[in-house]
Length: 199
Image 1 (spheres, rainbow, N blue to C red):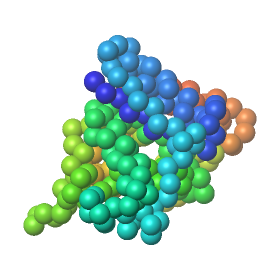
Image 2 (cartoon, rainbow, N blue to C red; image 1 turned 30 degrees about the horizontal axis):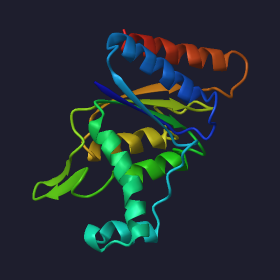
Image 3 (cartoon, rainbow, N blue to C red; image 1 turned 60 degrees about the vertical axis):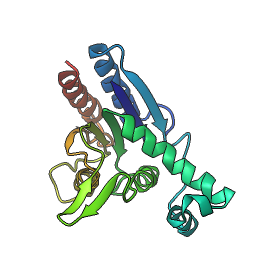
């Protein structure tokens, strides 16, 4: 079994979302000790944003790409290979200004490639990243799940489904900045859910 862990917090160390992801992965690996783990930390190794140069490189036939273009496409190819090989994906998604981190959006832009991870057919779009279990760990200073301010859950469910990943479980740790016992209670609630998932 291959597990892919994507850390997207801009805090390279001690981020709540990364710590919870580590706990979930540890539980999953207890279930399957032979599981192979790949960790991609987007704060420590940021992926370049999708810009015009990258778009031109991607749309240029491989044999016609310049060395610089080939190098840029290879960066995306590496991320696509990781997600293709993964059977379980643990994705962290801390909320920044009511959305996902820019680093996570850059990762999504990199793995969403027509005719590779999705394709259009006469019946509509077909996601090609199928048969994967995805866990999304969302952290937030306030409380948003189930309200109109939680735009990122809907977005992630939509884009992951578009790519073929429809088996998605969300784990929330919210109210982390609300003072009092809120932080401890939020982390305990998330830890309880993780323990049940990894049991």
